[in-house]
Length: 245
Image (cartoon, rainbow, N blue to C red):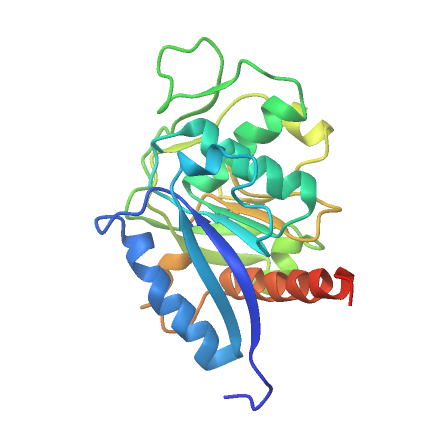
């Protein structure tokens, strides 16, 4: 363990917390491991999806992590939290449902695709961005190939990784439009399907269809989780420096 003093940041965990969602039950152990291994202290607050609809819900936090557990009780709340993080430069991580909704938020509010929908939330919609995967990834591990020079590659440290999933939905249409408006798809499976998205120019904006919080037994945080924690600490330091003396 390093002897450096602990560095602290506040993180908003957005989602409808449940003891039946494995990702949610992993969070306490991951937070403890970040302290023990990296001296990174994340002061975590759970924000239910309904409460996230408040425009002030995630302001003042140093990171926002939208966790799995969809369908969320409030799609609008999750999208509001993501939009705040994107527009205000708050470090963002979205995993599984957080990945899907990051793409949905970007499509609606940046690309002008106001009518695109998530099939799990709105199965009767006419235009889907997120649809059922042809083969469910629930409980599977699979290879992800990562673009060199991307944020994802710098975080994970490799151009190939094997990751765990627990999802049945993914992006389908309009991906070229999202790309044309600045979203980068930096990770794909071996069939070329999108598995990682990031936003160049943002301090830290990363979304993965896989679930890094499920890596191992939680005692060694996945590089993506560690990178979010470091980005949160940087944000906290910068925020304190901007405060008047």
